[in-house]
Figure 1 (tube, rainbow, N blue to C red):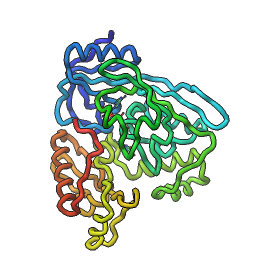
Figure 2 (figure 1 turned 180 degrees about the horizontal axis):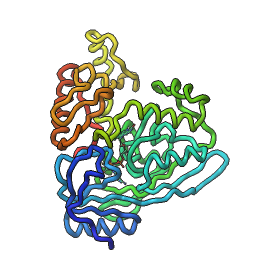
Figure 3 (figure 1 turned 135 degrees about the vertical axis):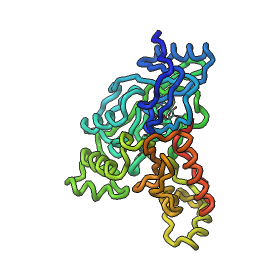
Figure 4 (figure 1 turned 30 degrees about the horizontal axis):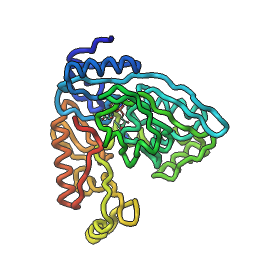
Length: 337
Ligand SMILES: Cc1cc2nc3c(=O)[nH]c(=O)nc-3n(C[C@H](O)[C@H](O)[C@H](O)COP(=O)(O)OP(=O)(O)OC[C@H]3O[C@@H](n4cnc5c(N)ncnc54)[C@H](O)[C@@H]3O)c2cc1C
């Protein structure tokens, strides 16, 4: 079996750019290598962590254990008919290269999720989403192995229990499985979703409403408004948009007449966390090596040599302000390790 790398630097494996190491680092290219790595880790009784592209992880210290980095490759067509194609994709495939490939094949479903960093294996974990579309809308099934028994599993869409930035993999199966493949059902008959934010406006600038132009418009908007992790380390949205009781919004409206919100059901609404953070005065504020991005209140950035602890402390201060001002509890979207 492939020996793990020892005391492995993780700076290039987390988009916050944190200078941390892991005792052991297993890069696994096949299911067999993955099983061998798990056996090894268990025999050494080490704690372990599955790491994709590290774009949704915050390391607060060196990782005292073994990292498994699934690099399983491949995009395989397993069904192709008049209406749709089923593509089985390895967990190690770069998410945006999959989106680029499917759009160039004229297949619809992933275009709004263009330019999201990370690997395919992580997409179902938090059910990635952007511009009115979520990964769950195109996921047919998720395959992987149970860490405890090394048995294979295959969960269909309903069994994945997808929700807003949520799935069974963040709940009942948290830390218990490694995703090895994700199968996507991509449509040949496009029903383009363009109502979200200023997507229509950006598409108009490019010309007609085509699949390729939706992808390009999303790329243009994201490039204009999101900080590039290569310049300022970050993990995208640090917090989830909180879902609260409508009664709370009615109470807030007495003080803030223009509170934006989106109905979830008759009793619950979603509040934009970015608006809450901006109102609390944190947008653009810097504390030492870390800060809240000047254009994107949801994004916490590493200005250089920050530690994970500094980022966590800033996040706690932001959460505290939001609780004091709005009586709203902000939940982190980023996985703190
Ligand atoms: C600039 C920027 C913009 C972003 N924009 C968006 C956005 O628009 N929408 C959105 O939803 N997210 C966004 N994100 C967050 C991030 O890109 C996604 O969550 C992405 O899916 C994470 O992929 P990853 O491979 O980097 O996962 P990692 O960060 O490596 O891991 C994330 C979690 O998944 C687990 N995991 C990873 N791979 C596997 C596997 N194969 N099996 C089991 N568990 C696994 C990890 O243990 C961890 O808990 C953004 C991040 C950045 C930096």
